[in-house]
Image 1 (cartoon, rainbow, N blue to C red):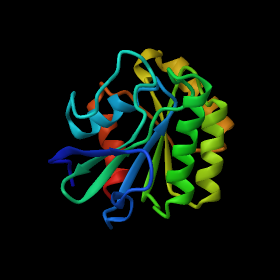
Image 2: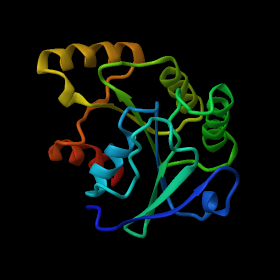
Image 3: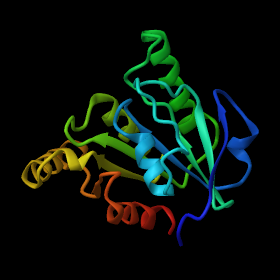
Length: 189
């Protein structure tokens, strides 16, 4: 299966009927500035579906994209950076927790995107703990692998695997097509 169509449906900040409309959901989560928008765009074969901000922390809603008229990609706001300061950061954290724990929505897969250079940060570890506690299937994607040479990428990947206590981590760059297929194969099973 491949992605043939992708369109923005709407952004939400609270409870909304789209949360329980019956279509499967694949959610994307990660810190601001890890390249979440670029990853989603690379998977759907578009440069403009998900807006890429010049300033991190622009996404303040949970954005729904209909894929192949069969399921959603759900872009959760980036955490760890927000222009509104601590209040906005807390609001985003609460929105993510609401989506994962309190809406009753159970995504078929959550893709946790991290920056391979930065490694696993505290909120990434917290996100993994929530996903494990809730029994949600997840995939960790170490993005921006093109920013490191092969040796550096290998060393960082070992460290991330150790820190995450997770072996199945996909090394990724939104500029490399074969890597997109690795993720799509896991999403579209």
